[in-house]
Amino acid sequence: MSFSSLGLSDALVRAVTERGYTVPTPIQRQAIPAVLSGGDLLAGAQTGTGKTAGFTLPILQRLAADNGKNTNAGGHAPIRALILTPTRELAAQVEESVREYGKYVKLKSMVMFGGVGIQPQIQQLRNRVDILVATPGRLLDHVGQGTLNLSRIEVLVLDEADRMLDMGFIHDIKKVLALLPRKRQNLLFSATFSEEIRTLADSLLNRPALIEAARRNAPAEAVTQRVYLVDRERKRELLAHLIRENRWRQVLVFTRTKHGANRLSEQLTKGGISALAIHGNKSQSARTHALAQFKSGALPVLVATDIAARGIDIIELPHVVNFELPNVPEDYIHRIGRTGRAGAEGEAVSLVCVDEHKLLADIEKVLKRSVPREVIPGFEPDPRIQAEPIPNGRNRGPAPSRSPSRNHAPSRAHTESARPLHSRETLSGRGRPAKTAVQSSRKAVKIPALMGG
Ligand code: AMP
Image (cartoon, rainbow, N blue to C red; front, side, top):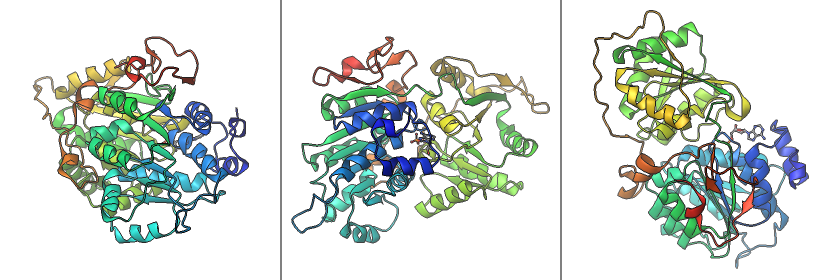
């Protein structure tokens, strides 16, 4: 199976070939023809599956096909595709992909997020923009200022929709939907399917094609997972030991809190291992700087909270360390999805203390497998140490926010009911294997009946 056999134009095939992709990933094989057909799409796909190219390539093709025919009253080309993402990093990354894959077609893209000056964005909007990738908050700022016209949108993508709802963006999404023309193509991508996502999909999508990528981390194919049992107070020492002993040069480390991320990066740096932290309280320029350093290989350790790490895409990131286990098992899957991407080998290590055994058991339940436990000589846990409760706050980094609603506690969607699709649980019926890779829901969308949850 090649990209051209999926119906993509030579210009797009050339761009992906130059990027080094030879074979479409399963989600691309399903999504590309579905999106090219012009219908709505509901896709269960996590980051790391190649979903970005899965929606970007066919959108580029569709827009390029009748490029130039569309102009506004003033002779100005309108914005024709809108991709909404939960975080700034993901927006930046998706737009980079749009530019990369679209380098041989004559379409212009723009990325729009908060935390940076609005004026240059206003300036850019005066020029041609065909595809806009945005976070909801800044997008609505522009709408409020009258600097953005969404009345000619032909394709809408909600990327990582579950995370957008989790971050409290539902009201913003509804406001954005109200600004779009009624006739358009809608694509919704989500890793998990909570009640809220089903409701959203139900109201948004018209007879969608339903596709899903295999849950890539179920039994982690490309990711070796390991637990090191260690005392709470000795985790930092063990991490430094692992980095030094194994000569790790690019490690993404997760902490549960922003404060924890700061403290750990400072302590590692003091101990001679360069590290920076990224989380929602850091300025956009500090986040961009840290990420660029890390991506280039100049910075060996990046310490991140769950939200900040969304959208970090480094091909073949070799090591992910859970310095603390996340409170919600699905975050573990998102975290380890940072490594072993698109077929590369990766290693995910979790430093687990006596407080976290229940969290580990919950994660293993979702993974449907146990993760091997090991003890590093010299770091044996002290059996006299008692478990202590883990503070329950998720302490997610704030969204690129404007209104208080975006900073509120995570919704029930994530803490209670959201979870990834299980390998035997499909969009087309829980526990029943999907009949075909892509199927059209015959009846007008009755998503609740179609998805487990
Ligand atoms: P995504 O799930 O869209 O974040 O993509 C995950 C990673 O897979 C990115 O680094 C992409 O560049 C890479 N990728 C996407 N499609 C392919 C492909 N067909 N072959 C190899 N790598 C790919």
